[in-house]
Length: 578
Image 1 (cartoon, rainbow, N blue to C red):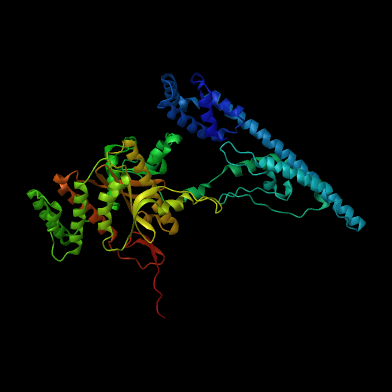
Image 2 (cartoon, rainbow, N blue to C red):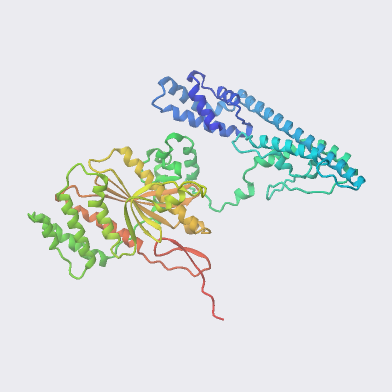
């Protein structure tokens, strides 16, 4: 049981009248959970997180909610009170006493082991014979005892939940007098200097072992408590996202993440490090002012945007839509045949789009409710998306209940080879090239429309899927510079009811992935407003132009740049002819 679970059990098993930080710490102490003064910030954060989740919990009474709100407001002052500090000091003393007892036992066994080994070696040398087994019998018994003690020590944990290595591992096969702990500022490691020992040095060595006892304990404790060297932390070249107002975006999201209930973390994009710039997450938007929010959106749009079409590409399509509008105004009995007559000479692609509009019109005329999610996607949105984006047959299009390629990799990344493979998030369709998913689509329910909760959950799933695509790409192209990786982004399509939203996601800095709404499209509800399908087709053609855009590649050695397929590729400088 860790500290978070212990605090959660405290609130579950304790009446709300006894909800106090001091009572919580005493509860953790009675549960034999180790914590110390260095863990005060961790305990305070977990305590505030649980209290915050209880404030709006439906199963909690109003009196308990008021008590939780009062605790949250006074938490910072309460944890600085003398009573709380006294409890932490008491735990420090208790843990230090346990460490001293363990170290005393270890030193005593090590010294005895050293004396027996020296005496046995001297005796065997005097006799001039080798008696196997007898001289080292006591030594093996002591080693066995030390191994048992080492296993017990290894099971202990620090107050922050990290495993404490056994003291036998710390001492190794040498005695305490052979260990010199050096405070290396650059690497923060323990160095072992082995010195040859002789029989004349035994007495002085034993005295030094006990004399340096306190120093070794403090050095050991300091070494294993330090996780990240300060020089490594300062060498971080990724930086942070600082707005013109001086606000650190990553820091604001980290503070907000502390108050997210762990049981419902899957509903919060910020929990996964994703900043939703579409404005739907009102709680996150309220963390920033209007000027700060507009500044973040502007910075996102400068990097992630759809390509504008050229006049030569737009003109034939607009001619097609003008002809279709004229047919709609006549209201013919056979609308499908009327649309079929709207032919654009010598333009295969535009005529293909006309056939897609015919198919959409045919299915819209025969629409019957209710309609499932799969049926709506295959008859309307997916059909047009596939027809436009895969016209040149460069990209691979798949649809159905399929698993994301990057999601499957990220989900099973930390599992052992012998474990059963886990299934990641499923998507409704994807457009990929060389297993890089440039476009992922997800549909939320059929008709009638699904509830808002379903729509929001699917949007969070889509954003996580897009994030994992970039993470997997960064892993496959390890060594990419941050400024190059920031230029890469991927697209996502989220459809619900008659809405068709196009999102883009990129990486800004450590712990901050940005999700922005690039285009919001409304699908035709009936034949009378069929002409609004023009916006959907234009948006898909802009996506197609973005995917097919060619970029000039660099000739620098091992340089990573965005190229044709939106991927990060590595180019090598050609060898000069000798």
